[in-house]
View 1 (spheres, rainbow, N blue to C red):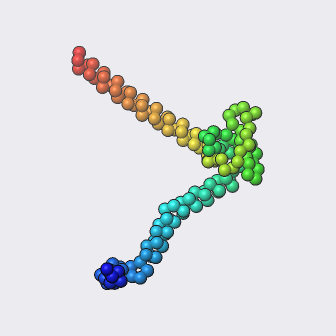
View 2: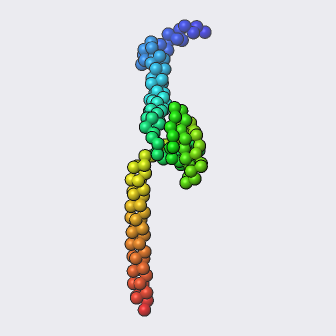
Length: 146
């Protein structure tokens, strides 16, 4: 069988006509562009966000470590921070900056605490209203049954 004729036939049939001579190169470049936008770019953005967070850390900030512990920053070094855990002043542990996953400023903590208190108050008010409605319905049923 003559493969040259077969290749010529597929080239003339329009298979190669859609992308032309450089169809395979265009598809590979397109694949790399998709990989960049779906894998590499989000990773770079996350790294930039984490670096900005770590550079804005200050003494007194509350941090969450990668192991799940909350603590307060006592001292900041080049690559190491000293974090105080719990109310025990003797529990100060040096750790790498890369082990910190989130930072909360003290003023943000106060605002978050106030917002949480408001949500709890709203939830309690809703539950109280539901309880009163339920009692009223039960009282009406009791009056009808008399």
